[in-house]
Length: 387
Image (cartoon, rainbow, N blue to C red):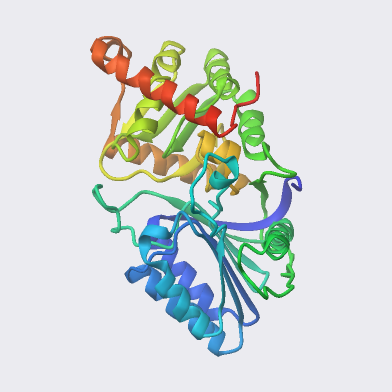
């Protein structure tokens, strides 16, 4: 993707409580075009409210297009919302609806995991927040914890390029979407502020490792402090080595990870890596108060990223993802304060001595889960690059 660009205004949004009011206000102000991508668009109070705003925008002549992942949103009653929006004139597309019969082909797991909204080519919302109510978290104490950013500035140029590329692919492959019209979103790339930022996307064509490379580049120059929050954490050897090397250079390295079990296999596979990281001085805090869905990081004084990409095989090797990298001391400090507050209020620090004292059965479960995840990755033809 394009390099770091100056001239942005970037606002950090915490959870749905900040994200959805800002999003709905921007939708209501749209005059030309509205483009929405999400992994989930739930038929719940928040989803219905956003859908109503989109339908209202279409009624006043705004070109409204929505692309939602067919697999991620399947349990959330989205097809009823889709039909309502289509009747309102919204062009609604399901990404990769050809799910069944399910087979062990890696293409089945190449999902649209990005969360992007582009309004009039001038304003974008990018992050990890799906179109779903924070309280809609079966099996978890709500609200879920997540972040997004509202961006204005030259980053809209590469973002519109990425959006247009996906639309062209949708038309080419069709995915059962007959009559999908040609379309191109035009960016209004005016200077909006002083913050430097760039868009980093991951796909399975030109940008296969872009997000991982952005993380590795930041970790390789880290000198003082690294804090990463990731809902799902199963990095490859190269990423783990970068974390340990940063700690060896004297940087404090903290990982804020999910403490509650959502996917049993992945949760315990992640914990199989704790021993190596703890032995190298990396601090691990498991967030237990509610569902941690964040995918953010801060490195030293002025590097931060907010986006949709976890640090696991699904995000780094398969899914379409989008992160924003921000180089700004104020933004980095704000995000760091939020992450530290989450760790202090709802986190449990994993102590190396207690970790080493865990039972043989627990160790066996972790390594069984790790081996099973690696085996499944192999079945799907997915492997981390060699270090």
